[in-house]
View 1 (cartoon, rainbow, N blue to C red):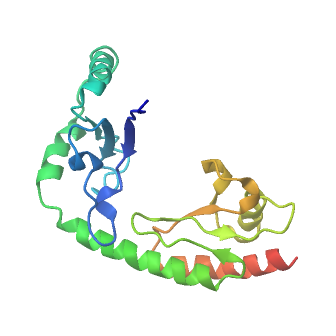
View 2 (cartoon, one colour):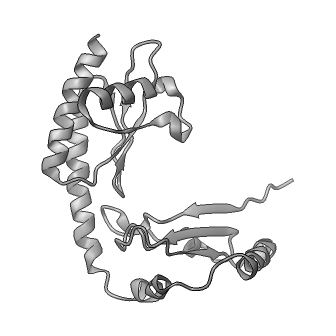
Length: 203
């Protein structure tokens, strides 16, 4: 028996690839059972607008989904707000700001990776888009990612998010870094993290 799958994609970062935009998965096959979500918040620099969209593939397997979404929209969603009128001009208009934004993010990513690689016991897969890094700290036995993050915050004032909050094993030592701050601030932050991490792992 062939198992048929439906896929749901969060594509809000699709236009923030460091080497160019990533096309929506639905374009690979418009007849595939794909549901995609995106918004203006990230690549269009409109956080807080709560303005986005959902695209449903034209597969007949999603007909019931489309009917349910329309029913929900008819009965539960609010009336159109002014920000929603920005969606069409944003998607069809000038996107030149995204080039400079991607370049700025790439510079922050490069700095982040070079500094993380200098820290003892730290490894990280290099990001290719957006503004997050997910380093892994080789924690001492019995310590968790939450222990590390809280200790880092108390000692330095630097706040990361522990990886177990995203479903990763707490003992694996993953944490998420947001590298949106200016390069000078990131340099200061990584100085503090490097010194703290060396002390924490040697204690």
